[in-house]
Length: 155
Image: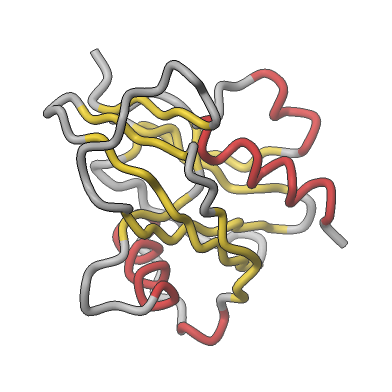
């Protein structure tokens, strides 16, 4: 059983029980490939990132999450802020009963080839995907539009 279920603009999504939750996620690329993690909490693929702590700026949070989830210490100035996804229908419902509206600050980061990544306890797998390979996987619904936007607008 999954720990969390995600919703985006779903009329059947449960009503929130908590205040809005600020998150930071990253579009991490190497050439034309995008890095995704297969999450343990939902067994779906998603972007690297997580919650912003009350004392952090979003860019500090994504730098911390990149260290925790990938084992990479990346200076804050290497992350480029892309967008904020804050539509009210972006919901995460946890097994403990807490239901959050999610506001996500998205950053981009380009990594060199042959970078060594470390998988964290939060992930089952890390993998690089081309745009064509994304059709065969289940992406967290609160990240799928971010991924689509990236590939639509990528240079």
